[in-house]
Length: 124
Image (tube, rainbow, N blue to C red; front, side, top):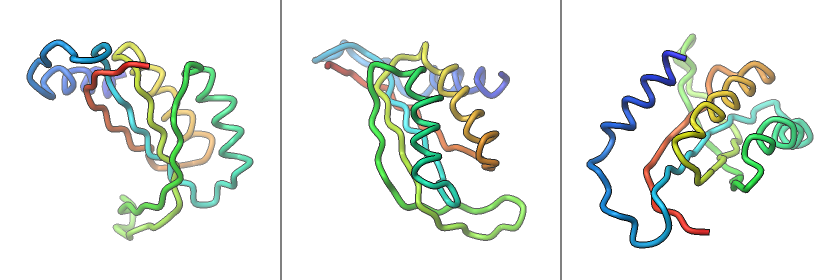
């Protein structure tokens, strides 16, 4: 929970106040980066259906990707397929994003799940 409080503090100072949105309403875009090495499509789809979709039933985007990261324990660069999840939402969703990250790390024994938050104006 301490990490979540830090994230909120960082968001508060992330950018100067936005002027009124020219279109839509103010919100945030969350991007989550899931490493997929050793995780087959069926397992990923199961996680998406069981863990992610119930937390964001109104919609999201999944992008197939390829990425790399430095393993903390060894310093080795790991290259792997990935999925990037993008969700236009509001700051109230931040705890649900943290739940998804924790669930993925636990279920698939992952070191981390990347998270980037950007302020936005959105209209659907």
